[in-house]
Amino acid sequence: MHLFRRARIPLACLPDPLSRPTTAPNAAHEPWRECDVVVDGSRIHSVRDSADAPAGAEPGGRVTDLGGLLVFPGLVEVHTHLDKCHTWDRAPGVHSDFWESNAVLTADSVRWTEEDVYRRADFGLRSAWAHGTCALRTHVDTSRRMGAGAHAALARLRSEWSGRLAIQTVSLFAFPEFFGGGADHILELSAKYQATALGGFPQPNPDLPRQLDRVMAAATELGVGLDLHVDESDLAAAECLRATAEAVLRNQFRYPVACGHNCSLSVHAPERARETINLVREAGINIISLPLTNLHLQGRARAPAPPGQRFGAPRTPQWRGLTLLHEFIEAGVTVACGGDNVRDAFIGWGDFDLVEVYVASVRIAHLDTRLAVSPSVVTTGPARIMGLPGYGQVAPGSPADLVVFSARRLYSLLARPSTPRRFVHGEEFREARLPDFAEQDAWPRA
Image 1 (cartoon, rainbow, N blue to C red):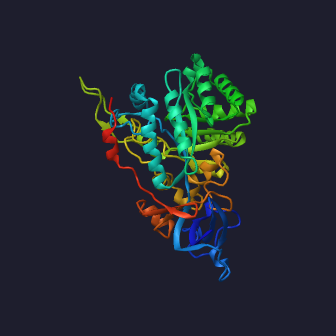
Image 2 (spheres, one colour):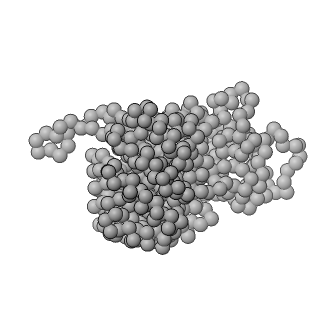
């Protein structure tokens, strides 16, 4: 056993009753509780308020006094794209909005062999692990033309990372592909490689209700849930989230459903948005926001292109693509924030660092006004969406993965996201070495 004394753990990551507000003078601005955490093997054995620890009552093992350092549970990445990551150097999207970026990656996808995806995804996973992530869900583009190599690569990586980083896959497909003859192949790959969910990309169209019915029937046959990309635009007419909620209720779909992005909801009329949020709650749908990539992609504007030029001069964005996170939280809907794309044509940066995602989400979405809840967007929220009991918490029975920051306050971490961190895995502090980007210099470009 290993006792870690005086760890300041966010209330959102503690079990009841430890998660209840404290009476400390700064509790509103610093919603954590100082706890003693006992680790036994690969699991947390017990957690107690440090103030309640009886003098001299130590377990028969090692003791490390953390001295009031801020401690998060292992972080949980709910939405990323390992099959696309680290393609920027060979297929950049410098001027891209969403559809231009998609076209760049579609052209590059002819190179996505099993070995190519394995090499890039392994680099991404080593980065995630070095930043403190202990579970990750990735979407995998899946069609008749592509996906087999990526699924095979991720199956290898899932096995190799077992016991350190839990990996889930979602088969991402375009609805025209699914309904244009590709459904059997998509479902075959999903079953063969044990995808956690089907993850289509529905677009507004008159046939959408029937399409969603058929996708839910296919998911039911596979025995998996859905994790959809919806309404990733500023179009007020885009209501795929609402259509999904209605389809869940109409079909009495019993498997988990998550909807990512949901940007268009922010431009809906307030009453219409409230109605949609109520439907989402009734249907039990979970909401995923991707602030970094949507901040980068949405609202791009340019002046008219001069003669002979493809692009006009860039114009300052007026809208940034954030969904109604506060309103979902108030409605009791589970929400999470993910990193989405990393160093591909959609966005040229990122490093699978959920601390970056957390800090940016607090700043962009004004989650400082719900600071006690805020850590849940990269811990308990994604763990609940991914169906991982105990993950994202510092609680008895949870995996013994801890992120130990050199900061002692949440506002210190928010002020300095580069705050050094150490990691506990099991009863030991573990190495946390980021892979060097110089490795990528040796990768094939063609």
